[in-house]
Amino acid sequence: MRFEAPESLSEQIAQHIGQRIVVRSLKPGERIQELKVAGELNVSRGSVREALLILERRHLVEIYPRRGAVVSELTVSSVNALYDIYIDLLCMLGRKVLERWAGHELNGLAAQVRNHGSLLGELSPSGNDPERVIEAGFDLVRNACGMVENPFLQETLENFRPAISRTYYMVLESRPGEAAETGALFQKLAEAAMQSDAAQLQQVIQQYGEHQRKQILTILTEENA
Amino acid sequence: MRFEAPESLSEQIAQHIGQRIVVRSLKPGERIQELKVAGELNVSRGSVREALLILERRHLVEIYPRRGAVVSELTVSSVNALYDIYIDLLCMLGRKVLERWAGHELNGLAAQVRNHGSLLGELSPSGNDPERVIEAGFDLVRNACGMVENPFLQETLENFRPAISRTYYMVLESRPGEAAETGALFQKLAEAAMQSDAAQLQQVIQQYGEHQRKQILTILTEENA
Image (cartoon, rainbow over all chains, first blue to last red; front, top):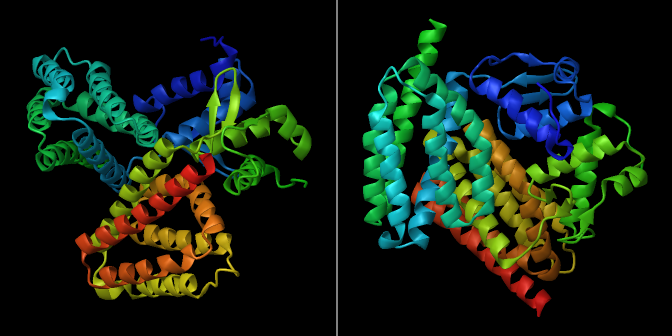
Protein backbone atom coordinates (compact mmCIF):
# COMPACT_ATOMS: atom_id res chain seq x y z
CA MET A 1 0.00 0.00 0.00
CA ARG A 2 1.22 3.51 -0.79
CA PHE A 3 -0.12 6.80 0.55
CA GLU A 4 -0.07 9.95 -1.52
CA ALA A 5 -2.05 13.11 -0.61
CA PRO A 6 0.36 14.70 1.87
CA GLU A 7 -2.25 16.91 3.57
CA SER A 8 -4.19 14.08 5.16
CA LEU A 9 -1.43 11.53 5.42
CA SER A 10 -1.80 11.01 9.17
CA GLU A 11 -5.58 10.68 8.76
CA GLN A 12 -5.09 8.04 6.06
CA ILE A 13 -2.68 6.12 8.24
CA ALA A 14 -5.11 6.41 11.16
CA GLN A 15 -7.94 4.99 9.04
CA HIS A 16 -5.75 2.16 7.78
CA ILE A 17 -4.64 1.12 11.27
CA GLY A 18 -8.11 1.83 12.67
CA GLN A 19 -9.73 -0.53 10.17
CA ARG A 20 -7.30 -3.29 11.16
CA ILE A 21 -8.26 -2.75 14.80
CA VAL A 22 -12.01 -2.79 14.01
CA VAL A 23 -11.81 -6.13 12.20
CA ARG A 24 -9.40 -7.37 14.89
CA SER A 25 -6.47 -8.22 12.65
CA LEU A 26 -4.78 -6.02 15.25
CA LYS A 27 -5.83 -7.52 18.57
CA PRO A 28 -6.76 -5.76 21.80
CA GLY A 29 -3.63 -5.29 23.90
CA GLU A 30 -1.29 -5.59 20.90
CA ARG A 31 1.58 -3.10 20.71
CA ILE A 32 1.81 -0.81 17.70
CA GLN A 33 5.41 0.03 16.94
CA GLU A 34 5.88 3.40 15.30
CA LEU A 35 9.06 2.46 13.47
CA LYS A 36 7.68 -0.81 12.16
CA VAL A 37 4.48 0.83 10.86
CA ALA A 38 6.47 3.68 9.32
CA GLY A 39 8.64 1.12 7.48
CA GLU A 40 5.69 -1.00 6.32
CA LEU A 41 3.73 1.97 4.98
CA ASN A 42 6.79 3.86 3.77
CA VAL A 43 5.88 7.01 5.70
CA SER A 44 7.70 9.09 8.29
CA ARG A 45 7.69 8.23 11.96
CA GLY A 46 6.16 11.65 12.68
CA SER A 47 3.14 10.86 10.50
CA VAL A 48 2.64 7.57 12.35
CA ARG A 49 2.84 9.40 15.70
CA GLU A 50 0.16 11.82 14.50
CA ALA A 51 -2.00 8.92 13.32
CA LEU A 52 -1.68 7.28 16.73
CA LEU A 53 -2.81 10.51 18.42
CA ILE A 54 -5.87 10.50 16.14
CA LEU A 55 -6.56 6.85 17.05
CA GLU A 56 -6.19 7.64 20.74
CA ARG A 57 -8.85 10.31 20.34
CA ARG A 58 -11.04 7.65 18.69
CA HIS A 59 -10.61 5.32 21.66
CA LEU A 60 -8.87 2.60 19.63
CA VAL A 61 -5.37 2.91 21.04
CA GLU A 62 -3.87 3.99 24.30
CA ILE A 63 -0.55 5.81 24.35
CA TYR A 64 1.68 5.35 27.37
CA PRO A 65 4.77 7.47 28.03
CA ARG A 66 7.88 5.38 27.30
CA ARG A 67 5.84 2.27 26.39
CA GLY A 68 4.25 3.60 23.24
CA ALA A 69 0.89 2.76 21.68
CA VAL A 70 -1.23 -0.29 22.47
CA VAL A 71 -4.54 -1.37 20.90
CA SER A 72 -7.16 -0.56 23.54
CA GLU A 73 -8.43 -3.54 25.52
CA LEU A 74 -11.85 -5.17 25.20
CA THR A 75 -12.93 -6.24 28.66
CA VAL A 76 -16.26 -6.51 30.42
CA SER A 77 -15.58 -3.25 32.22
CA SER A 78 -14.35 -1.36 29.13
CA VAL A 79 -17.39 -2.54 27.12
CA ASN A 80 -19.70 -1.48 29.96
CA ALA A 81 -18.04 1.93 30.23
CA LEU A 82 -18.22 2.41 26.45
CA TYR A 83 -21.91 1.48 26.20
CA ASP A 84 -22.81 3.52 29.28
CA ILE A 85 -21.61 6.73 27.68
CA TYR A 86 -22.53 5.91 24.08
CA ILE A 87 -26.15 5.01 24.89
CA ASP A 88 -26.41 8.22 26.89
CA LEU A 89 -25.00 10.31 24.03
CA LEU A 90 -27.44 8.71 21.57
CA CYS A 91 -30.33 9.50 23.94
CA MET A 92 -29.09 13.09 24.07
CA LEU A 93 -29.02 13.15 20.27
CA GLY A 94 -32.57 11.75 20.09
CA ARG A 95 -33.86 14.31 22.60
CA LYS A 96 -32.21 17.19 20.74
CA VAL A 97 -33.67 16.05 17.40
CA LEU A 98 -37.17 16.09 18.89
CA GLU A 99 -36.59 19.43 20.66
CA ARG A 100 -35.68 21.05 17.37
CA TRP A 101 -37.98 19.35 14.92
CA ALA A 102 -41.67 18.55 14.88
CA GLY A 103 -42.89 15.06 13.96
CA HIS A 104 -43.89 15.95 10.40
CA GLU A 105 -40.44 17.44 9.76
CA LEU A 106 -38.89 14.10 10.61
CA ASN A 107 -40.32 12.27 7.62
CA GLY A 108 -36.96 12.03 5.87
CA LEU A 109 -35.13 10.70 8.88
CA ALA A 110 -37.92 8.29 9.76
CA ALA A 111 -37.89 6.94 6.21
CA GLN A 112 -34.16 6.38 6.48
CA VAL A 113 -34.61 4.62 9.80
CA ARG A 114 -37.26 2.36 8.24
CA ASN A 115 -35.05 1.61 5.25
CA HIS A 116 -32.23 0.69 7.58
CA GLY A 117 -34.63 -1.55 9.49
CA SER A 118 -35.63 -3.27 6.25
CA LEU A 119 -32.01 -3.62 5.19
CA LEU A 120 -31.29 -5.36 8.47
CA GLY A 121 -34.40 -7.51 8.15
CA GLU A 122 -33.59 -8.62 4.60
CA LEU A 123 -30.03 -9.68 5.21
CA SER A 124 -29.88 -13.44 5.05
CA PRO A 125 -27.60 -14.94 7.69
CA SER A 126 -25.32 -16.26 4.95
CA GLY A 127 -25.15 -13.00 3.03
CA ASN A 128 -24.08 -11.02 6.07
CA ASP A 129 -22.11 -7.88 5.29
CA PRO A 130 -21.07 -6.39 8.67
CA GLU A 131 -19.47 -3.30 7.22
CA ARG A 132 -22.59 -2.36 5.24
CA VAL A 133 -24.84 -2.81 8.26
CA ILE A 134 -22.54 -0.78 10.50
CA GLU A 135 -22.18 1.98 7.91
CA ALA A 136 -25.96 2.28 7.49
CA GLY A 137 -26.37 2.63 11.25
CA PHE A 138 -23.79 5.39 11.49
CA ASP A 139 -25.25 7.20 8.48
CA LEU A 140 -28.39 7.52 10.55
CA VAL A 141 -26.48 8.97 13.51
CA ARG A 142 -24.70 11.39 11.18
CA ASN A 143 -27.96 12.59 9.64
CA ALA A 144 -29.51 13.06 13.07
CA CYS A 145 -26.40 15.07 14.04
CA GLY A 146 -26.86 17.21 10.94
CA MET A 147 -30.36 18.08 12.16
CA VAL A 148 -29.17 18.99 15.66
CA GLU A 149 -26.22 21.16 14.57
CA ASN A 150 -24.11 20.64 17.66
CA PRO A 151 -20.53 20.17 16.43
CA PHE A 152 -19.35 19.08 19.88
CA LEU A 153 -21.95 16.33 20.17
CA GLN A 154 -21.26 15.27 16.60
CA GLU A 155 -17.50 15.13 17.15
CA THR A 156 -17.87 13.23 20.42
CA LEU A 157 -20.15 10.68 18.74
CA GLU A 158 -17.81 10.42 15.71
CA ASN A 159 -14.89 9.75 18.01
CA PHE A 160 -16.76 6.82 19.57
CA ARG A 161 -17.70 5.40 16.17
CA PRO A 162 -14.58 3.26 15.62
CA ALA A 163 -14.78 1.70 19.10
CA ILE A 164 -18.48 0.94 18.62
CA SER A 165 -17.73 -0.40 15.11
CA ARG A 166 -15.25 -2.83 16.63
CA THR A 167 -17.77 -4.25 19.10
CA TYR A 168 -20.65 -4.26 16.60
CA TYR A 169 -18.39 -6.02 14.10
CA MET A 170 -17.75 -8.75 16.68
CA VAL A 171 -21.48 -9.23 17.15
CA LEU A 172 -22.28 -9.38 13.42
CA GLU A 173 -19.44 -11.78 12.75
CA SER A 174 -20.25 -14.28 15.44
CA ARG A 175 -24.07 -13.92 15.37
CA PRO A 176 -25.00 -13.88 11.68
CA GLY A 177 -28.73 -13.70 12.54
CA GLU A 178 -28.24 -10.65 14.74
CA ALA A 179 -28.60 -8.02 11.98
CA ALA A 180 -32.17 -9.14 11.24
CA GLU A 181 -33.17 -9.06 14.89
CA THR A 182 -32.28 -5.41 15.26
CA GLY A 183 -34.47 -4.46 12.29
CA ALA A 184 -37.58 -4.40 14.47
CA LEU A 185 -35.97 -1.96 16.88
CA PHE A 186 -35.34 0.47 14.05
CA GLN A 187 -39.04 0.39 13.16
CA LYS A 188 -39.84 1.36 16.76
CA LEU A 189 -37.29 4.15 16.56
CA ALA A 190 -38.99 5.59 13.48
CA GLU A 191 -42.41 5.40 15.16
CA ALA A 192 -41.27 7.17 18.33
CA ALA A 193 -39.62 9.92 16.26
CA MET A 194 -42.74 10.46 14.12
CA GLN A 195 -44.86 10.74 17.26
CA SER A 196 -42.37 13.20 18.83
CA ASP A 197 -42.38 10.92 21.88
CA ALA A 198 -39.05 11.73 23.53
CA ALA A 199 -39.49 9.31 26.43
CA GLN A 200 -40.38 6.46 24.07
CA LEU A 201 -37.50 7.35 21.74
CA GLN A 202 -35.02 7.23 24.59
CA GLN A 203 -36.46 3.95 25.80
CA VAL A 204 -36.06 2.37 22.36
CA ILE A 205 -32.48 3.67 22.05
CA GLN A 206 -31.68 2.28 25.48
CA GLN A 207 -33.30 -1.05 24.64
CA TYR A 208 -31.26 -1.28 21.45
CA GLY A 209 -28.02 -0.32 23.20
CA GLU A 210 -28.59 -2.77 26.03
CA HIS A 211 -29.38 -5.54 23.58
CA GLN A 212 -26.10 -4.94 21.77
CA ARG A 213 -24.14 -4.61 25.01
CA LYS A 214 -25.49 -7.98 26.16
CA GLN A 215 -24.45 -9.68 22.90
CA ILE A 216 -20.92 -8.36 23.17
CA LEU A 217 -20.52 -9.33 26.80
CA THR A 218 -21.74 -12.85 25.97
CA ILE A 219 -19.27 -13.14 23.10
CA LEU A 220 -16.42 -11.85 25.28
CA THR A 221 -17.25 -14.39 27.98
CA GLU A 222 -17.34 -17.19 25.38
CA GLU A 223 -14.00 -16.11 23.94
CA ASN A 224 -12.36 -16.06 27.34
CA ALA A 225 -13.85 -19.44 28.35
CA MET B 1 10.64 29.44 27.92
CA ARG B 2 12.46 26.20 27.22
CA PHE B 3 11.04 22.70 27.12
CA GLU B 4 13.01 19.68 28.24
CA ALA B 5 11.40 16.29 29.02
CA PRO B 6 11.23 14.82 25.51
CA GLU B 7 8.54 12.21 26.29
CA SER B 8 5.76 14.70 26.92
CA LEU B 9 7.04 17.52 24.77
CA SER B 10 3.91 17.80 22.62
CA GLU B 11 1.73 17.71 25.76
CA GLN B 12 3.80 20.52 27.30
CA ILE B 13 3.47 22.59 24.15
CA ALA B 14 -0.28 21.87 24.08
CA GLN B 15 -0.66 23.05 27.67
CA HIS B 16 1.38 26.17 26.99
CA ILE B 17 -0.66 27.16 23.93
CA GLY B 18 -3.89 25.98 25.60
CA GLN B 19 -3.31 28.27 28.59
CA ARG B 20 -2.80 31.21 26.24
CA ILE B 21 -6.12 30.40 24.57
CA VAL B 22 -7.93 30.05 27.91
CA VAL B 23 -6.82 33.50 29.11
CA ARG B 24 -7.45 34.85 25.59
CA SER B 25 -3.98 36.15 24.90
CA LEU B 26 -4.58 34.02 21.81
CA LYS B 27 -7.94 35.22 20.52
CA PRO B 28 -10.80 33.19 19.01
CA GLY B 29 -10.30 32.95 15.26
CA GLU B 30 -6.56 33.71 15.46
CA ARG B 31 -4.29 31.57 13.28
CA ILE B 32 -1.59 29.47 14.96
CA GLN B 33 1.39 29.09 12.69
CA GLU B 34 3.35 25.90 13.21
CA LEU B 35 6.66 27.28 12.06
CA LYS B 36 6.38 30.44 14.12
CA VAL B 37 5.49 28.54 17.29
CA ALA B 38 8.28 26.02 16.64
CA GLY B 39 10.75 28.89 16.35
CA GLU B 40 9.49 30.72 19.45
CA LEU B 41 9.59 27.61 21.64
CA ASN B 42 12.69 26.16 20.01
CA VAL B 43 11.01 22.83 19.27
CA SER B 44 10.47 20.82 16.10
CA ARG B 45 7.58 21.50 13.77
CA GLY B 46 6.44 17.90 14.27
CA SER B 47 6.05 18.46 18.02
CA VAL B 48 3.95 21.55 17.36
CA ARG B 49 1.76 19.57 14.95
CA GLU B 50 1.22 16.93 17.62
CA ALA B 51 0.40 19.64 20.17
CA LEU B 52 -2.17 21.12 17.80
CA LEU B 53 -3.81 17.70 17.38
CA ILE B 54 -4.05 17.47 21.18
CA LEU B 55 -5.60 20.95 21.31
CA GLU B 56 -8.07 20.02 18.58
CA ARG B 57 -9.18 17.09 20.71
CA ARG B 58 -9.63 19.56 23.58
CA HIS B 59 -11.88 21.75 21.43
CA LEU B 60 -9.54 24.79 21.60
CA VAL B 61 -8.31 24.80 18.01
CA GLU B 62 -9.68 23.72 14.69
CA ILE B 63 -7.37 22.30 12.06
CA TYR B 64 -8.27 22.84 8.42
CA PRO B 65 -6.54 21.08 5.54
CA ARG B 66 -4.22 23.53 3.76
CA ARG B 67 -5.20 26.45 6.07
CA GLY B 68 -3.70 25.09 9.27
CA ALA B 69 -4.76 25.64 12.87
CA VAL B 70 -7.09 28.37 14.11
CA VAL B 71 -8.17 29.15 17.70
CA SER B 72 -11.76 27.89 17.92
CA GLU B 73 -14.41 30.60 17.74
CA LEU B 74 -16.55 31.84 20.62
CA THR B 75 -19.98 32.59 19.24
CA VAL B 76 -23.51 32.39 20.62
CA SER B 77 -24.05 29.14 18.76
CA SER B 78 -20.71 27.57 19.75
CA VAL B 79 -21.27 28.49 23.42
CA ASN B 80 -24.78 27.03 23.26
CA ALA B 81 -23.53 23.82 21.66
CA LEU B 82 -20.73 23.52 24.23
CA TYR B 83 -23.02 24.03 27.23
CA ASP B 84 -25.70 21.72 25.80
CA ILE B 85 -23.34 18.79 25.76
CA TYR B 86 -21.31 19.67 28.85
CA ILE B 87 -24.35 20.09 31.11
CA ASP B 88 -25.65 16.78 29.82
CA LEU B 89 -22.34 15.03 30.52
CA LEU B 90 -22.25 16.48 34.05
CA CYS B 91 -25.81 15.22 34.64
CA MET B 92 -24.70 11.80 33.43
CA LEU B 93 -21.76 11.96 35.86
CA GLY B 94 -24.07 12.95 38.73
CA ARG B 95 -26.49 10.12 37.94
CA LYS B 96 -23.70 7.55 37.77
CA VAL B 97 -22.25 8.70 41.09
CA LEU B 98 -25.63 8.18 42.76
CA GLU B 99 -26.20 4.84 41.00
CA ARG B 100 -22.94 3.51 42.37
CA TRP B 101 -22.77 5.07 45.79
CA ALA B 102 -25.18 5.45 48.65
CA GLY B 103 -25.70 8.82 50.34
CA HIS B 104 -23.52 8.07 53.38
CA GLU B 105 -20.66 6.99 51.11
CA LEU B 106 -20.71 10.43 49.54
CA ASN B 107 -19.58 12.25 52.66
CA GLY B 108 -16.12 12.96 51.28
CA LEU B 109 -17.38 14.32 47.99
CA ALA B 110 -20.12 16.35 49.67
CA ALA B 111 -17.56 17.88 52.03
CA GLN B 112 -15.43 18.85 49.04
CA VAL B 113 -18.47 20.35 47.32
CA ARG B 114 -19.24 22.37 50.46
CA ASN B 115 -15.64 23.55 50.76
CA HIS B 116 -15.71 24.63 47.16
CA GLY B 117 -18.96 26.46 47.85
CA SER B 118 -17.34 28.25 50.81
CA LEU B 119 -14.27 29.08 48.77
CA LEU B 120 -16.50 30.71 46.19
CA GLY B 121 -18.49 32.48 48.89
CA GLU B 122 -15.41 33.87 50.63
CA LEU B 123 -13.73 35.32 47.59
CA SER B 124 -13.97 39.08 47.75
CA PRO B 125 -14.68 40.71 44.43
CA SER B 126 -11.29 42.41 44.55
CA GLY B 127 -9.34 39.30 45.51
CA ASN B 128 -10.68 37.29 42.62
CA ASP B 129 -8.46 34.43 41.47
CA PRO B 130 -10.16 32.89 38.42
CA GLU B 131 -7.67 30.08 38.01
CA ARG B 132 -8.06 28.91 41.60
CA VAL B 133 -11.86 28.93 41.36
CA ILE B 134 -11.83 27.05 38.06
CA GLU B 135 -9.32 24.51 39.32
CA ALA B 136 -11.40 23.79 42.45
CA GLY B 137 -14.48 23.18 40.29
CA PHE B 138 -12.68 20.73 38.04
CA ASP B 139 -11.12 18.93 41.00
CA LEU B 140 -14.66 18.14 42.00
CA VAL B 141 -15.50 16.77 38.55
CA ARG B 142 -12.31 14.71 38.60
CA ASN B 143 -13.11 13.21 42.01
CA ALA B 144 -16.63 12.38 40.92
CA CYS B 145 -15.14 10.69 37.83
CA GLY B 146 -12.84 8.68 40.09
CA MET B 147 -15.93 7.35 41.90
CA VAL B 148 -17.70 6.39 38.68
CA GLU B 149 -14.73 4.65 37.03
CA ASN B 150 -15.77 5.24 33.45
CA PRO B 151 -12.59 6.17 31.57
CA PHE B 152 -14.57 7.21 28.48
CA LEU B 153 -16.78 9.62 30.40
CA GLN B 154 -13.75 10.94 32.27
CA GLU B 155 -11.76 11.48 29.07
CA THR B 156 -14.69 13.15 27.33
CA LEU B 157 -15.18 15.51 30.28
CA GLU B 158 -11.43 16.19 30.49
CA ASN B 159 -11.37 17.07 26.82
CA PHE B 160 -14.08 19.68 27.37
CA ARG B 161 -12.28 21.16 30.37
CA PRO B 162 -10.11 23.67 28.48
CA ALA B 163 -13.04 25.01 26.45
CA ILE B 164 -15.16 25.36 29.60
CA SER B 165 -12.19 26.97 31.38
CA ARG B 166 -12.01 29.57 28.66
CA THR B 167 -15.66 30.57 29.01
CA TYR B 168 -15.64 30.39 32.83
CA TYR B 169 -12.49 32.52 32.85
CA MET B 170 -14.35 35.16 30.82
CA VAL B 171 -17.17 35.19 33.36
CA LEU B 172 -14.88 35.45 36.40
CA GLU B 173 -12.81 38.18 34.82
CA SER B 174 -15.66 40.43 33.79
CA ARG B 175 -18.03 39.63 36.70
CA PRO B 176 -15.85 39.67 39.83
CA GLY B 177 -18.87 39.03 42.07
CA GLU B 178 -19.87 35.95 40.11
CA ALA B 179 -17.72 33.45 42.04
CA ALA B 180 -19.57 34.18 45.29
CA GLU B 181 -22.97 33.79 43.65
CA THR B 182 -22.25 30.26 42.54
CA GLY B 183 -21.30 29.23 46.08
CA ALA B 184 -24.93 28.69 47.03
CA LEU B 185 -25.44 26.34 44.11
CA PHE B 186 -22.62 24.15 45.35
CA GLN B 187 -24.31 23.84 48.71
CA LYS B 188 -27.45 22.60 46.95
CA LEU B 189 -25.33 20.14 44.98
CA ALA B 190 -23.93 18.68 48.21
CA GLU B 191 -27.42 18.38 49.71
CA ALA B 192 -28.87 16.60 46.69
CA ALA B 193 -25.94 14.17 46.65
CA MET B 194 -26.25 13.38 50.35
CA GLN B 195 -29.97 12.69 49.91
CA SER B 196 -29.26 10.45 46.88
CA ASP B 197 -31.83 12.53 45.03
CA ALA B 198 -30.84 12.03 41.37
CA ALA B 199 -33.61 14.23 39.95
CA GLN B 200 -32.73 17.07 42.33
CA LEU B 201 -29.00 16.66 41.61
CA GLN B 202 -29.58 16.91 37.87
CA GLN B 203 -31.81 19.92 38.34
CA VAL B 204 -29.12 21.73 40.36
CA ILE B 205 -26.44 20.87 37.80
CA GLN B 206 -28.67 22.15 35.03
CA GLN B 207 -29.48 25.31 36.98
CA TYR B 208 -25.77 25.93 37.53
CA GLY B 209 -24.89 25.27 33.90
CA GLU B 210 -27.69 27.47 32.60
CA HIS B 211 -26.67 30.27 34.95
CA GLN B 212 -23.11 30.15 33.61
CA ARG B 213 -24.27 29.88 30.00
CA LYS B 214 -26.40 33.00 30.46
CA GLN B 215 -23.46 34.98 31.89
CA ILE B 216 -21.22 34.07 28.97
CA LEU B 217 -23.83 34.88 26.35
CA THR B 218 -24.41 38.26 27.99
CA ILE B 219 -20.68 39.02 28.00
CA LEU B 220 -20.33 37.94 24.37
CA THR B 221 -23.21 40.20 23.38
CA GLU B 222 -21.64 43.12 25.29
CA GLU B 223 -18.26 42.51 23.63
CA ASN B 224 -19.76 42.48 20.18
CA ALA B 225 -21.88 45.57 20.82
